[in-house]
Image 1 (cartoon, rainbow, N blue to C red):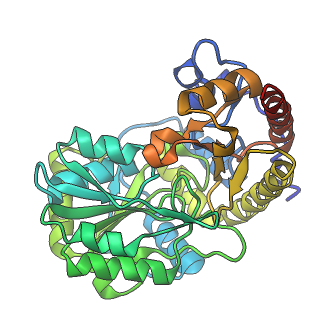
Image 2: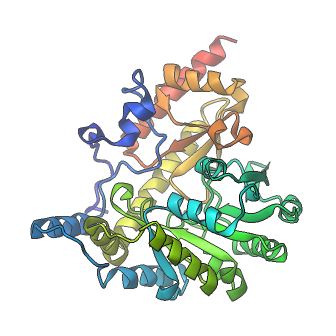
Image 3: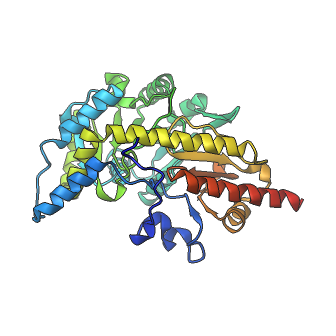
Length: 395
């Protein structure tokens, strides 16, 4: 832990970091606690910085092939870290996870057909579906005893709809923080196979889980589950390199993989960024100890939030299994979504992601990013506590 200073406060405004940018914060919000955009406020693993620095020192940045060590680093990571043995021939490259989702929609569903989603869920799912001329079929999660569950009876009904051709799975789930169990995933996979619904699984947060919870790649369940799946992977979240990495698509079915590869070629989604390649290879090959330390630190931040919210009436934590994004329940404050946003910005000094952005099921909630120095998080919680006390005092 001594080598990784997660308490260091770094001024991210020295670069055009989106989390601190007026595009996100607004002209009037530049001094808010910026906890909406899903990246970390931690310096990356030293192995990544060293790899990028070494590559930059070479001084030539012409066209390059994929480094020989990248795919072995990825497959070894998946095997050792998650017990998932992946044939390198099943892996394709893509610019980012959203690109994979959009390509999958266009390749494997027909215009006007339905994509199942499980709200409240990552808001870009809805945008991709709408912008590509498909429609959303909702299978909302169920909040029971402060824990979200899949509604499998409703999923069976949704998957049986003649228009349903695909499901966007979020595993682990953004924003509610569930790390789906092997049993839950197996049940979902069985339903989808029965109704010929292709599972496209966004597993970008898979590396970040808390003690007692293990990420299960859906495609690792069985050969049948793998063949009916497309998995989206990227080190962007795990290693805080969203601005300098790409993504990986695991497509076990040979016919779908051939179609996907042809589309990659048609769209020329096949160029390599030298710095992204070395950053990803270094992350997977030598970044494990940094990630372990980061998860441990984030777990400490979660402990802090849990303890402090116990003292703040009207704000509850939906206990997460993983990710550095936590789902807060503000419904007992009795504020409409717009009023809640105004309250958090103007009274608490918070800029977090509005719960309503994840679907109507998110009304009254908010997503907080806790991957930041603990002192900044503690100060933000102080402000929230004062603001809530003031709100209660007005009733």
